[in-house]
Every structure is written in C-alpha cells, then in structure tokens.
Length: 459
Image (cartoon, rainbow, N blue to C red; front, side, top):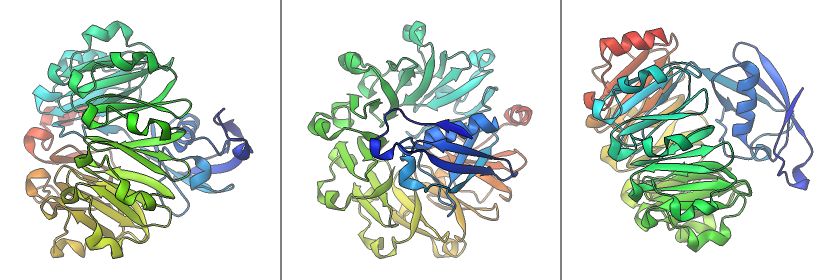
C-alpha cells in the first residue's frame, strides 16, 4: 500500500482514503491518499508506480476526473479507477497555435507546422533529448529538460527567446504560456517570466508576491499563480485577467483555475466559482452567480465559460456568440459528463455518449443533420478555433464546423484512434499502433511531411 497526500488537509478530511487504480493490461496499485489531495497528485503517484509517462484517470462510471478537483469530491473510499496510458504527448497552443510538438517523457521531441512559429526546432534539436514538458504560445514553444532547465524556440515576439532569463531557468517544474509570453514555476515556488510584457512576460510588479507558488495558469494575455495557501497572484494585461484586486478577498483556498482569452474563473473544492477579467471574455458572472454552486469543472471558449455541475447540468456566461448563452439548448443539458470548447462554441458529452452543442453555428455550435446521427458513444471531443472532432468508442472520428479549421473529408479513414489533439485550425489523431495522422490547415499543422513522419516513427 502506497501513501501520499497534502499536508494542508482539513482536519475533517484527514482520514486516509484507500483507492485502487487499474490499467487495461490488468496491472493495478492500491493507494492510501489524503481526501484533501488533488486528482493530479493521484495521477502523478500512479504514473510513478506504473512507470508510465502520461495517464488519464476515469471513475468507475467512465467519467474523466478533473485534475484540479479534491479527491474526496469526485471519488468514494474503495472506488476502482481506470488509468489509460498515452504513448506520447501532443502539444499546440490554445491561442491560435500554428504548429504541433510531440514528445516522449524523458525522450526526444518532434515538431511540424509553420516553421516561423515553432514548427521548426532544428536550432535546439540537439537539446530536445530528454523532455519533461512542452508548452506553446501563439508563435513559440518552451520545453523542460530532464535536468530541470528550460529552452525555447520559435518567434521571439511570442517568447521564443529566453536568453535574458536563461540563467534563472533551473529546477523548472512547470511552464505555462499566454498568447505571447511564458511563465516558469521553479522548485522553490518562485516564478520566472519572459516574452511580450503586454501578455504577462514581465512579472516585476508582483515578483515579491510570487513565493510558494503551487501552480500557474494563463489566459491569452495574463497569468495567475496559485499559492500553497490557495490564494492567487495575477499579472499581465489588467483588462485580460492580470488584475484580480476586485475579487482578491474571495480568492482563498482556490482548487483550480480555467481561462478564456481575456478572463479567469477560479474553482473551489466546495463547488463555488469566482471570475475576473474582461467582461467581454466572461470575467463578469454576476447574473449567474446564484447558479454557480456545486460546480465540478469549468471549460472555456475564446470568450465564454461553461461550468459543469455535479448533477450533470451546465451554467454558461460570457460572450453569447461564443457560447456564453446556452438558453436555446438548456433543456438538453442534462446528464452531462464532460464539456469541450472550440474558439467560438461548446460541445457537451452526455453520460450516454450523445452530444449537445451551442455557440456560433458556423464554428461547431450546430451539428449538421447528416453528422448528428453519427455522434453516438462519443468518448472524447477536441476543438480547434472553428471545428470539432469527436472520437467514438469504436475508434472512428467524426468532425463538424467550418471546413477551414479542420475538415477531415480528405483524410484517410480514421480508425483505431486513441487520442485527439487540436491546434487553431488542424487536428492530430494518435492511433493504436502509435501512428500520428494530421488534417486541417496545412500551414497550421494539418500536414506532416515525410521527413517528420520518419521522425515520428522513431519515437
């Protein structure tokens, strides 16, 4: 029996909880955990035990567990969880990214897409040998090496040059990216930033507050650091979430944070949600605040939010045209298990595998009739800016939305797919045999050259 947990556990949650995690291969581990610990801590413990780079945890009901949730909120003592391994990680920017990066944990990385915006990593390829994490801004990438150092490549206007802070980038534990900047969390709980100052690349005004940081999240133009005591420090564009002073007194014991392009939503273990940032991006939630109780997870489009409640209902706010208004489908939003956002719409997956969509109908907010009947037994959904791709239980893929953002009509039959990933206008499917298939805009990662395919096969 393995034991781990948070030292900050509430006395009422101090009794250890025993859980079992099983992989499809039959391997399993029993863990004794603090109920106050978070799901991402449980995932990390399982990865270390199984010696697997990337795991996703699902409940016995088949629901994907939110990494920022407290364990006692989402599972019961004695539950058996399912762990699904991914062969490698695929990364692209949420903020209109134009390239992809694929890497093995402690292994090499491969990139493709627009070479000006990170699709060409030849300048640093010799250093991309033992990668721990990769993060992407609009036009650049940053990677953490096995020794805890960080390196960057891509357009310097979007954080592709970290030379001015390179000597500080040691013992890096996490990197997050806004549209044009990066923030690195170090092992001692301090933070190093670089890139465009207007999107959070300059944290000097709050540097004295960035101590004991546990996790960093990013909007398109600002950053938010969650401290060990659950308080929050923000910086970057004041109108895009970089100024949280109006809600500072409420930001205590924060469990996790989700972001649109210009606003943040903080989730608490008791199911409350607090928002700040640009009103046009979902920073003002006063008109639905009375409904934001018992929230399990929050998802974002470019300028709206959708909160999933434990009873399977959904609350939305933000720009109506980008999914902030779900009144037209509110009666259908029952029994929802998970939500995915594109740039301008949302797709909710029910527990039975059917879907409900809303938002801009051109960009995936409305499913064409000829596609709707195929959306059964949906397991995973990913969104580009204007298109959705759904992975079905049989390993096939269904897509809909604006063709310019990821139409799959001209791709080889997508069968035996295990995972989906998206850039701003392209998608990547990882198949059961490890093959990587891309489609969508050729300049934004939708085409993989023969040379890159050869590198991917070597992974």
